[in-house]
Structures are given as C-alpha cells and as structure tokens.
Image (cartoon, rainbow, N blue to C red; front, side):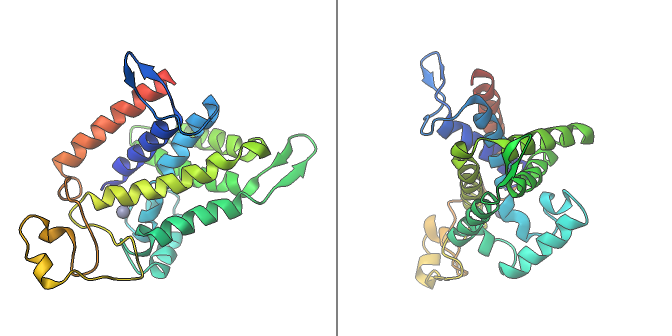
Length: 250
Ligand SMILES: [Zn+2]
C-alpha cells in the first residue's frame, strides 16, 4: 500500500472507533472510546502518522524522506534490526514494539511551574508522527506542516495526565491498520515474524486461495491487487471521504 493510503486508513480507523456521530440514519462510528473533541482530532492525525511507522524499515518510503538526514538514518537502523522490508515492523511483534515505545516515551513527565506536568518525549514523538502524516498531503505548504506538527505536539505534550491513554491507543491502532492494509495487497505480511511458517507446496498449487499463503510465510488477502492498484485508489478515496465527513460531523 502507498504511504498516503496508509495514513488515510489510520485516520479512518481512529475516527471509526472514537466517534459516534450519525448522518441521518447512518452511524459513522462505533464510539468504543470516550474522547474529547480535541483528542479525537489529535488522535486521528497521530494514528495517521503511526499508520506510516511500519514502513520505517524501508529507506525510500515517504517517512525516510520526512526529516532528512535523521529520518534516513533512523529508517536504515530500523530496517537492519527488523530484518528488512515487510518483516519485523509488519508483524505482531512490530505493533507491540511501536506501542511499547509510545508507552515508554509517554512515561517521561516533567513538572513545570507555568504549564504543570508536561511530556517532552511524547511531544517529540508526536512531531515525528504528525510530520509523516502531513508529508503525505503533497499540496500542503511546509510552513503549514510545521504549524500542524507543533500544535499537535503541544497538545500531546500538555494533555492532562489522567487522559493520556488515547496517545498509546492511536499508535497501536495506526501500526495495526498499516499491516492490515499491506495484507490486502499481493505481497502480504507475516504476522508471526520472526517465526516463519511456510506454505506447503500443495497449498500453493490450489486454485484461487493458493497465492494467499506463501513460501516465505507471508499471508495475503489480495483484494487490492498490487500496491498502488486502481482498487487501492478506490478504497483510499472512499476512506478519505469518510475521514472528511466524520471530521466535519464530529
Ligand atoms: Zn508496509
């Protein structure tokens, strides 16, 4: 899946679980989590950025080019640790790693006189995630990218201590949605990495479903075809419309 499409599916997933707005008789969200309006909005953009994170294993992905030269270096390191593209970061272990990282940076709390308790680690991580998400909107001028990133990070850094679970949740959901998205393309993913359960030869020879479980252990439900296919564009357009409507109504 392409970077921008991952980002929009992250935002859509976040709005689906946190909003509970009705458009006529159509329910636009499941409202599983109680959020303030600002948490809904900030969560959508953090989740969109987190939905780009698994491709940090790929040195030419959108996020590698987000903040050069730091981003190039970081993506090379992550790629080395996670065994290359679509391996470690595209697995349950990867989701856990990203969520754990969000949880750890969020533990760094500093008491200040004028602003109360602030969260510098979470704020810096938020700048990164937001810049990934905004970077996918190519029409966005750089100055506006910075304003959005700083405003979002300010919100993450100063959000009340008893209301912080949404940040962790947004990172977790974003990473999971990314992997789901890639599973819908022909390449597929190995959720169980580093465990590799190879498809037996007889399975791979089966008609229709034979390609869904591969010799390299990856599984795919390739309804979108190859990355960047027309089907992927159609899905991304539908998700974008959903995000716009849900944001407007919420
Ligand atoms: Zn990916």
